[in-house]
Amino acid sequence: MRNLKKWGILIGLIGILAVSGCRSEMTGETTDSVAVFTIGEETVYLNEVWIYAKAVQQEYEKNYGTGIWSVELQNENGEVQTVETITKEDIIEEILQVKVLVSKADSFGIALSQEEMEQIQRQAEAFIGGLTDADMAETGVNLELAIQVYEENAIASKVYERIMEEGNVEVSDEQCRQTKIYDLYFPTYLEQGDGTFVALSEEERTTQRQAAEEAYGRITSSEDSLNIETAAYEYGCINSDFYTMSQQELMEQYGQELTAQLYALKDGEYLGVVESEYGYHIFQMIALTDAEATQDKKEEMEAELRKKYFAEVYEDYLKELDSSWKFSKNVDEEAWNLIQFAPETVEE
Image 1 (cartoon, helix red, strand yellow):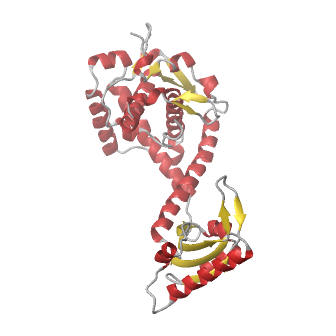
Image 2 (image 1 turned 90 degrees about the vertical axis):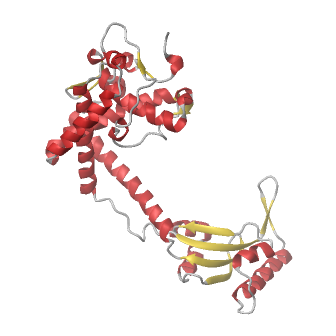
Image 3 (image 1 turned 120 degrees about the horizontal axis):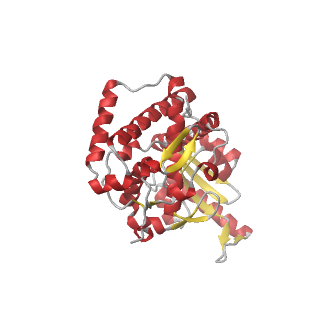
């Protein structure tokens, strides 16, 4: 599920597994002999895929319920698929990502410490301890495989961190600055019921401007206690509100000249009465730099840049390991179909 999938490593989920639901329908073969896909010279078998599938299954069902698997969504290509199908594709991509990152461990000089290996041993033992004999017999999962999966994920996480360190992805405070204003708005257009707008007459425009000037005088008067929010109610300015935007968004909304005037204000100061293509405005600068909103935007922008940077690096690494890798070519569809989440897909 593209909007549910996390771009990253799954090891954090594996430690909380409880066995339930995920089934692999075998007909004679064991899961450790069924090849699901290849990457370079390595073959990934069904028992390894099962571990990842269990991790994803529990996480999704905890957040969305057991009925999530039959829900239909559009995939990235606009095709309608069930969540189960999309998720299974994502699982292959996640395992592929781990394998590719692990292949770069030596070039980064990355290895696990004795303490980390001991922790992995404990995690793997706890995971195996949560499986019944029937689970282990059906899935072919054993302690050695669980240790391998934990170990590879730990290494892949370290490689990912090193890639991000080298990328040094940062966004300056100015780039992500979010400015909070209050716009007391006196429109010079009337909205019709069908979504169209009709310009006010010249006389009506004059009345609106006079109302705006009166409101501005009262708001800025030391003898009147009217504040800008109360003025919106008193003058019937129903489309007035607080807005938090970047400088670019302000320019797109109000134009370059008005934005420059707004940026010349100090916190708490007013700009009014000014005209835009929409009508008359009185602005109050609430915060030239809204600290919380700016930090949130910074994190959002940096996350997006990190994702983009990693995707570019990862694509190059994948080509190094297997230059012709394609889902349709490298994944065995019959083996892939053996992993099932939705109860209704399991044959009795």
